[in-house]
Image (cartoon, rainbow, N blue to C red; front, top):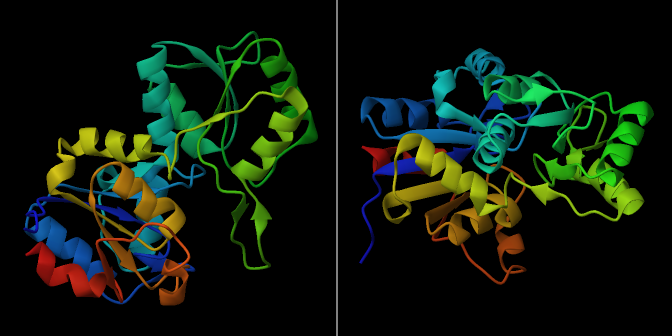
Length: 258
C-alpha cells in the first residue's frame, strides 16, 4: 500500500533549475505545493548563499519560492552545532551563507581557540586560512564540514569544493571531519523538523542517486529520481539501492501534489 504524501522535500540544482535556467514544470511544481498548502522545503548542499540570495536567484528564472522554504547545508550545519554545543565558537572558512547562519544561531566566529573549525564552500580558498584551520584542529578544535561535494560547477568546468579541501585538511591533521549535508540523513531529518513533517508521509525529489536518493532512503522517505540533472537511467543500475520511482522531471509530479 502506497503511503499518502503530505509533505515534500526537493533538491534545487538539477531538479528545479539547471545551469541557472528553470527546469520545465519547476515553477508549476512549486506553485502547486504552495496552492495546496503542502509543507515543503527546497534543499541544497550549497553553503555559499543565504536563503534570501537563493530566493532572488530562483526568482530570476521564474520560480517564486519564499526564502523560508529554502534549507541549505549552512543552515543545517548551524542547527547541528547549536544542538551539539549552544553558544559555542567556530573558525569558519566559507562565505555569507555559512557565516550568517552561524552568527544568527548565536555562534561566536573567532580564530582564538574555537570549539569548532567549520569548512564550507567559497570561491576564494586561501592557503593562509587552510593553514590556520589545520593548526586549530591540531590544537583540539572539532572538524565540521557543510557537505562532502568534492567539485562544484562553473562555466569553465569543475571547481574544487568543500570535500576536496576537507581531504587536504584531513590528510594534514589525520582528523576526519563530520559532514552535515547530503547524503547524511541528518540534513533530511533537520529539514523534517523544520516543517514539522513525519518521514512516513514525506517524499524526497532529487536528481542524484548518491546524495538525494540515498539520503531520502536512509531517512525513511519515499524517493523520486528526476532525470533533469546528473543521473541517467542507465546509471541507476550501478547502485545497490533504488528510488521509489523514476520520473522524467518535476513536471510529472505536479498532479501528485494536488
